[in-house]
Image (cartoon, rainbow, N blue to C red; front, side, top):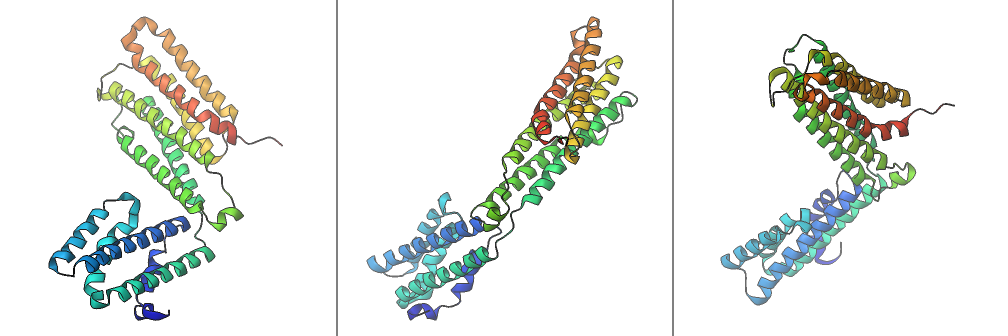
Length: 325
């Protein structure tokens, strides 16, 4: 580069690193924030040079004010560069602070431009596959969990405490991972040339995630109900023996809905089977009403959970159902 900027070529590679992010939009944002932080830091150092002179006190003041600027969230990655740039200008630049400042910013900007150009020419991938994998993992986890609940209801009562009784937090962690993966896909699509070649509409993915988050909530509630019936925790409830088989069938039918949706084989017939199983459970509860409200409370709560699961799953399954030729 011409002029004093040529004396500081080692800052250009740093600019390239700053502009090298997993996503194109992330690279642009990170680079802009870093350059903004540099300019602010250099401005603080310039104020010291104009109105005073570098000393232990003024250097400490620049670093302190720079750290206060670090509290500005909008600066993002540039927050750390404010005190560093000010310190470098005063200490490294010394008597040649103006030339150093010009060279520092110029070389960093050159590196940023090169890094962004490389990112644009070799565009990072749109991470659609990762999001689809996480959605599939969540569906699989929910389906297996419901099937485990059905197995527990079929076993001798009360059942031995299985993994299903402690899987609530795992399901929550999985939903968080899915949301994070979708956010990464959304970020990777922005100003990415690959998105124009192979566009992907994330609205269906977000709809599916919202449905699965609802299902996760109801599955956790159903788990607590069954744990209360089996071991009296977290809240002791009754579950008459006559209601366990129809509840097991309803849970298994709901598990089949989730699992078949994941494999792409679910259709309205799968939903009807689950609806029928839940209706049979409702009828069984009605037949046991003479036992009293407390005896059918747990089964009624479980029925409501399963009904809400199917209601949450229905739109996505109807949308994705295979169409006959």
